[in-house]
Length: 499
Ligand code: CS2
Image 1 (cartoon, rainbow, N blue to C red):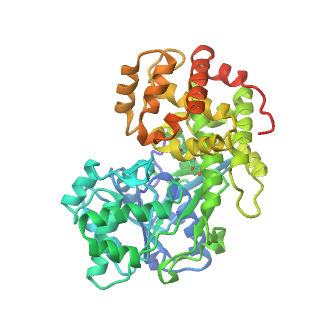
Image 2 (spheres, rainbow, N blue to C red; image 1 turned 180 degrees about the vertical axis):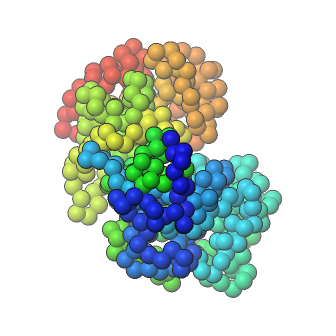
Image 3 (tube, rainbow, N blue to C red; image 1 turned 90 degrees about the vertical axis):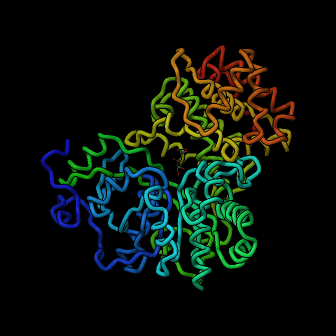
């Protein structure tokens, strides 16, 4: 599909077809200011593009080094291309291609953890950012504390100079900087977790306290962990995307990314020595409190995404766009927002109903093939902040929650591992085997399955299982799901009465 085309690289770049946007700055003079842990598609389509825009308008020392914490694939694809890759922006009107240059190099942590710590400890690095996904933090989602007995955390305690986890790398590099008399870097968490900066600060602090109290105090006193809200829909890259990038640019790129036009980045403005790119000049919002933006996004966007992923998957839909093209599930998500909006405080100047209308437009973008299976992954790590937080808010106001309950019931059916047509589901979740065991032991009766799943306090905490209203809403929704299927159960819900 890309055979015969020159490989994208520093030397072939100028030969890209004229419709392609190229880096608008002198790449050979770019210096590294940011090390990014977790080099998935998301950061390459989000933070990297803000940074790319900034470098084009005001060149500075903000080139990025990407670190893959697990596999060498990204490095193997990107380094033969000198770190260059194509970003494809897609919507109903068409597609545009841009070649991105701000990624200077890629390191693979398991191959050389010492090189990663050294890169983070380099004095030119002022920011270490992260997108390692929810499960990458070794966090107990119900308590927000570090899982001290997680095997990777145990490994990092035994080998602090050659860590495996993001938390381990951050502490190792901060320790190196302290020992060398340097200022720390700012740690910028860009994962979909509530109060993500504060959360990561407390995980690093939990970990530091296990190692060395003096270090824990130094980190708490000197380091900075601003919270952020990140938003852009970025589906996994497919072979068709690789072919499309080649067709548009005339160059073979093994690692393009695909994204929607929309993007949002809200950042708490607390950087050490104020050292940061002026991302506000290219559309990011620097604010003093990110919390309301995070709640809005996690509960309205990600909550609806997870609900649609489970219901859509069970109903046989491959993507979110297909799911919201189904009138029953489109109606469901509109009504779900009616359940969420009254219990979410709106960020300054934001109307949540308008925000939800824009979300529906974004979800409907037929050019973004975001698979329900992809979003369904890691539900045990996602449910607490996406759906259970809203459930708690509604219960505390004694409000009914039929749609939130149906979404959670759909997750329960999904992790049971068999779809509505009797086919096996490839459930990917760090708790997959625990979920399976708990459900196998529970037997088939809906109330037993619901009670069994509620007993997992890492997901539901200790409050929700004790709430009879929550339990009965879940048993009712799960029973309807079994008898009527996802579409039937969604269709049957009564019209929301002014929540
Ligand atoms: C999605 C998110 O995969 C998922 O769980 O809900 O990646 C979502 O697309 C982004 O948060 C949008 O900003």
